[in-house]
Image (cartoon, rainbow, N blue to C red):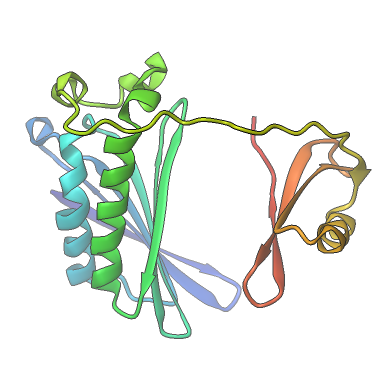
Length: 205
């Protein structure tokens, strides 16, 4: 496997982006794009990622991208993995006090997601192309309940600024709030984060 590393600096923080790609196509190796924030992405960590996430290669076709981000904050070791496809995005994150444990847990989480929602994912033809034929043809070992939406709600979306949307969310006692951004005229979502902070979701079309 061929490895590469890119070092980036934003403000006072230095990050590392490394990537790996098999030089032999018959190995059916995914492409791993690895970045680190407040952590040195050592060879041992990279190898753990290749070993643990390598379990997913039985599902995905070659050249499928896996974006991996390692970060450390207040001794909490977090890994985020995103596998973008055309119709869906497979994503999971895990946090523990040991990055190797977090890597192991996130691999198990994604494996469960793929197996559990296999039928839903591949129902869209554009996503089926990302998976290996033998995985698509396998008989499911376990039957999973169908996803059932038991309640729906319609409401008018009022244009407002993100800060005002956060205030409205707090007044309603909700953890998230959907609104139309007065600056962009796009539908956005604000949500609560830890430490009395907020997040903003802006969709890309």
